[in-house]
Image (cartoon, rainbow, N blue to C red; front, side, top):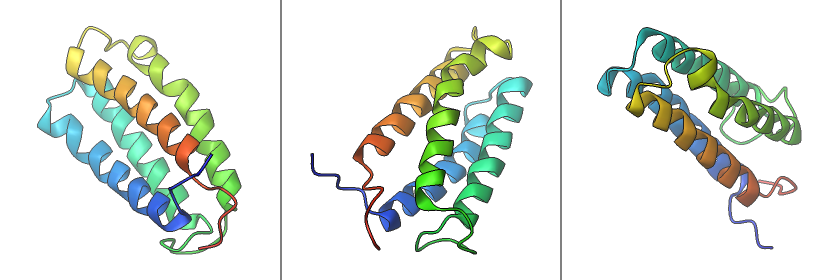
Length: 117
């Protein structure tokens, strides 16, 4: 299968995700727990991205494949957060986290983790 997402494009998508995680709770008026979860994810994704060995990093300290493994691990937890943190009744927040789960797995599946960029 052709994997069209290069490390550079993956970095662009990562930073766009960080911006979306930071903005969406305020724009969509998420409950406090959903906002805190999104803020924590924005911070952790931002930190991971800044330290990943790919073109858009601040310091290349984390191997790109390890970055992918961390994203997959977080992707497994994302769909559970609305229920674990008690905001599953808030449709926008719940669906945002479910959508983020889907995006995480699609991007991971389409990323060329072996590419030199």
